[in-house]
Image 1 (cartoon, rainbow, N blue to C red):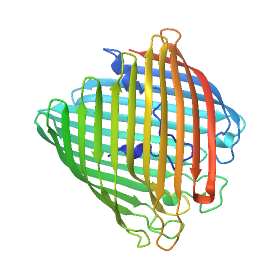
Image 2 (image 1 turned 60 degrees about the horizontal axis):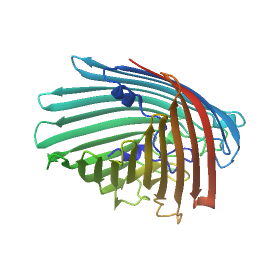
Image 3 (image 1 turned 60 degrees about the vertical axis):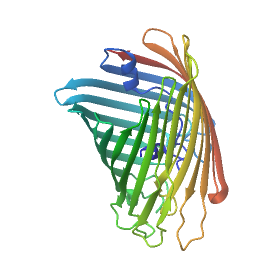
Image 4 (image 1 turned 135 degrees about the vertical axis):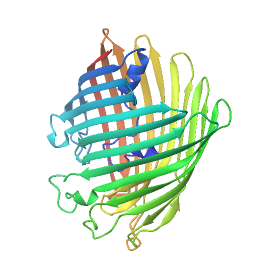
Length: 390
């Protein structure tokens, strides 16, 4: 149940749109026999809202990215390594400068009709809204040779938030957001036909905050239980995957309401022609939120787009609509919901064997019922990307 990883309605600057460039592991897969990929890119752009923030400061910006991926076969299994660094600097609003770094390693072992995956990730990022360092471990094990195949999954992540400068406490103090998030799930995958697979399971999700009480004196630890049922179809012209997951959150703090809620994810891909592919995603899940009140949020997002592949390059048109509703405290009659619309056009045109011209035009509109705030961002950028696989 990983759809909540890209839930950013609460963060003005976050995006639910697909990545503007394919992951390096996909680049390796496209080049038969390749085991290593290196990417270096740089670009310049302009926006009417650096950050973006509610201050809406226009600025030119420079963006840079470095990526490295390597796949190796070892006696213990297939080893995947990945490193990425990126930053974005604004000429007229340096407080909104962004930086992120990520290192990941995973080991996949297929043995005796079974598959085991062990993964480790360390990441750190900062922007005008947030400073976050995350370390996570994940373990998956599944039986793959039978029509009825059990599976087990477990993961744990430590989220360490840094203080946001130039803000009055408690809003500038982020220490009370530090937490350990963990999840465990077990279930069965059943092969119904050559193209259809059914999945049933159940799991437990916990949020354990390192500070016993936050700056408002509240305890936000929670335990959630959920059943899950999923269906996957894989055909020649497309794929369709669906998961339904009702869940019940139980809080330590009596001011929060224990309740059942609905979670789901639906994703489809279809090949319309030799050069055109369409995709659509719809999902709903819960997230932690720490803005103003210690509460939880339930977010629904819908994403759709077209990918066009031509001799002159690749172009992707995508749009998303996101809505987030918040649980209130029993003693506070506060209602809040956020909405965000995003649109982007990405293009990549080869210039030489390893060098491409890249461009992006994007628009974002964000509004919240809390204080009736609203902001938007229009941005355009142009750059060069060097990619080498071997």
